[in-house]
Image 1 (cartoon, rainbow, N blue to C red):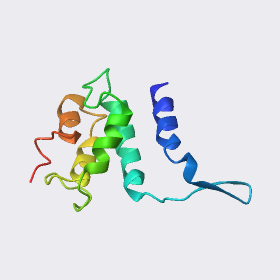
Image 2: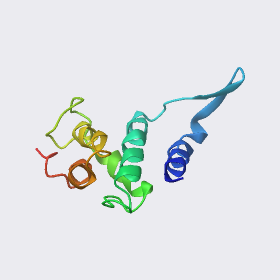
Image 3: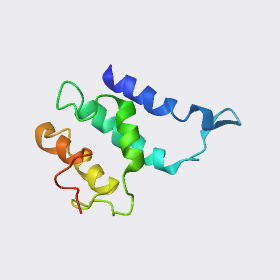
Image 4: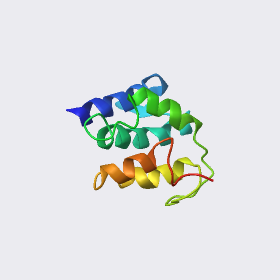
Length: 113
């Protein structure tokens, strides 16, 4: 149920940027920053939400924080104050909430310069 709500919230941010094409709706990635934030925030809300570690009070709080993260890192980074570093730890949150949720969050002890 929570995953469904998160998926709907993630898509709602892009509804206005869609156009009709042939028989369906196509997403136009006008804002690539939000395109990167959607999977990150979905993981954080589902895996680090109120029933786990509550890193972000709401999905809106996650999107606001994510929009400000530096994007100059590389995929798989485990250091550096970047979205890529936080994504690395966010991907690990299903297996270890207590360790990886704080490392994937805005006040990460690992993702610093």
